[in-house]
Image (tube, rainbow, N blue to C red):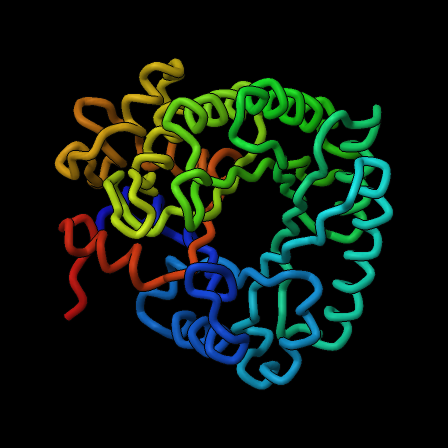
Length: 319
């Protein structure tokens, strides 16, 4: 396997089978995750995405996991009604996670907590308090701004990202806050433009904010899809754009060009790293960016993103 492929794809896909459009029952989604984890493609699997309110439903599946093969979780916190309720709501979520951890013990590992934010404005000190509270529970926190894709989106997004970056890392030595970007949905109206995604990629790089993406990234390369009657972002587009933005200090125009590219031949892997047209990021660049830049993306399918990557010849075929 090429070094660039391994560095790029390792633990990249958080499995969100509980969420639309798959919206599977818990048992079906959990058994899928268990199967993926044991499969030869399991090295590309990240966490199982579950809402905090449904943690208790995982307990019957504890025998499927063990300390040497734990259930890795990305937990979605409940959205608070207002900025003032955000911290108390987070504490309630953490209390639920603590109960789950005691019951599941070493058979589960909660890797991250993703927090949907209320609309701005945000009280001074809120994000520092959120980060320190999550770090105190041993969790990495990713915050998802709630602004609709309207004329106010850019200003509200930058306000949220500025506030996250200003919080910095906590005195407890936590990793600092990360951001979460919704890159699609089940309707065309839920899909941000390439320019909007480029703004977030550039802003997170410039603010040293880790970023996770969710929704709409089932396909490797940007394409028109009939199910939403719109162009959907490709996960290669988004992550190649972000990694080259980090490695080559690309500006927003160049980032947007990668996001808009619908030609699979523009994208490639090699031992040296990854390539978009004549621009290259090394394997070391990829690993650095995965660690502190672009972390992972959530998908309601694990098979589809990988199968389409194989169909493009960018991942080794299964024998």
